[in-house]
Image (cartoon, rainbow, N blue to C red; front, side, top):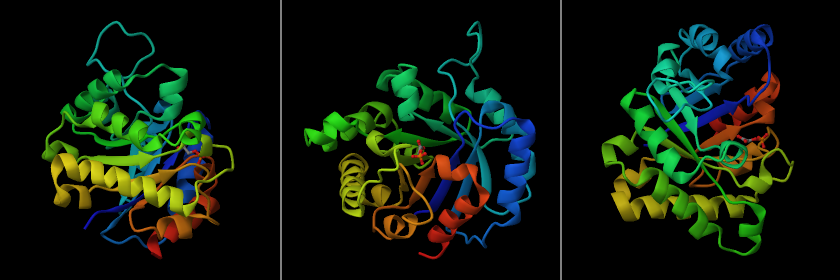
Length: 255
Ligand code: PGA
């Protein structure tokens, strides 16, 4: 059976002390997680080592980065490699978040390279996809998201894909308070799963976790997570507040 996952994406928030406090609060109130659950905390790079150390003893709670660079090392001022991320104790990396695609011009081609370097360094990947509003309005979101997945992931074999969790985040729902309806989320998640089945077969598709992201909060998480193809969430704003994050984790556990 595929895993259920709640991942918190802190984005560019919190200094070292604030980060430590939040991780401790998250751990202190963590609901009982089962074998089928994972919680992943994804802070900015500066927090990774501290977060990995704080979470190492916690059951089924892991640390992830929000990005890594395409290259292994060298003269790339300001960048951080997958090997460096791994050396902090982090086990995951988010790749292809829409903010990286939009503000830092990350292309599908670059993301395919980042996917490779992450896997070469034994990082698990949360691979983001999702359409902007004009694509949704033109009703071409299925083709748009399918292309992101083909370009970013379809060079992998099935074993490599087993290290990838997909996060569907409609850009028009991120940080806007406007959540996708459960029907919109379920339709896209089912589409993504069928695209994976077309390339890798049903068994692989059925074991791939697909998370929803975009204004997910304790109040809407239960109905979103109840959708048969929604396997949890990638949480932005609500992951910065321990009580809200717990509420969303509870929604996963209570499914
Ligand atoms: P949000 O962000 O929950 O604040 O909408 C989600 C994300 O971008 O990962």
